[in-house]
Length: 407
Image 1 (cartoon, helix red, strand yellow):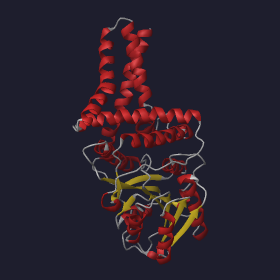
Image 2 (image 1 turned 90 degrees about the vertical axis):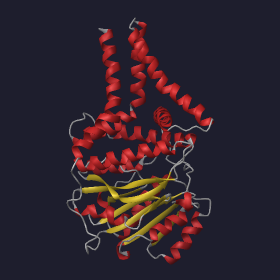
Image 3 (image 1 turned 180 degrees about the horizontal axis):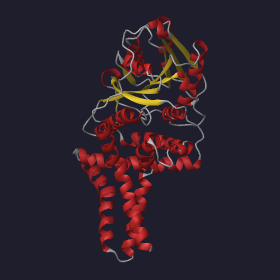
Image 4 (image 1 turned 60 degrees about the horizontal axis):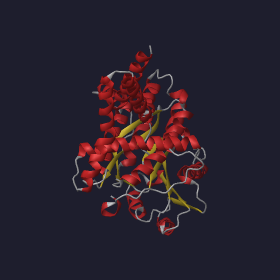
């Protein structure tokens, strides 16, 4: 009886990992084939275009803020329907001076230089309150939340906002394009993963209107679906999306709403960023349990398949290896071979890639396998931080390479 349970545990855990990384994306691709999410949209010159309030939190962004402000000035959207709210989270570099100077020539820019750090979600919450004082929450008031290091194309607002003609749409995500890829480091592996995530989220929106969370660098949310993020919450964009789903709204991704973000090359920095996000993922998993379990219905199935199983992947792999070890000790040599293969894939290949990298040899499949291991180690680290209790959401941003001044 024990052996049967161990067999089920081993293959069940591997099947869950296979489902979240391969079977589910293929299923969604098949379901979305030949469909689109553009059945009811605003046109660029529609006189009923909604009011847009752009919310942006800054912390020591002197390297990129000039380029960001320029991209905002070049937005192709009626100025009478556009407002920009910028909050500085106690920046200590030249950020405040740059934005204050820009506010003199941009009457639609409202700048709030906060003196005490509160983290990005806290800043966004306060900017939303400022925006509501000017225009109350409503179906025709759209928030666009963006980061300083994400550069926007002139038509990005048009592409995001057009979907809000459909009253069911609560949130629209932009298409994040990475720049500055290099052979060394993990930027190419990061780009492969993010590109696949963009397509998966786009197809989820087409299939069910249940895109599993925006990337956070640039997305739009109908203001009456916006929910303030609680203190010490780390992944604010996913929280906002889930609250929108709770209210009955739908979320989609717009591939033509292109924006640009530089990638990180240093594994240590990316590991730190992913560990912080992982801690926030477990916050969201426990906060919104009712929205993924049982995984019945489109939204719950998507949440469970796309997010929960990926967040649990390191535990699934450890459980599978533990089951294989016990079966091997109990005399099943076949599982001994399987255990060795798993250990080689999870330890041996990353070690080989590390050695080759030191020799200036970069092989993308090996680097991607190492990237997968790093992501799952970051999930374990994030889980421990979550278990120990998250005291605040203040963090230091990761340094990213910005070719051509940020773009």
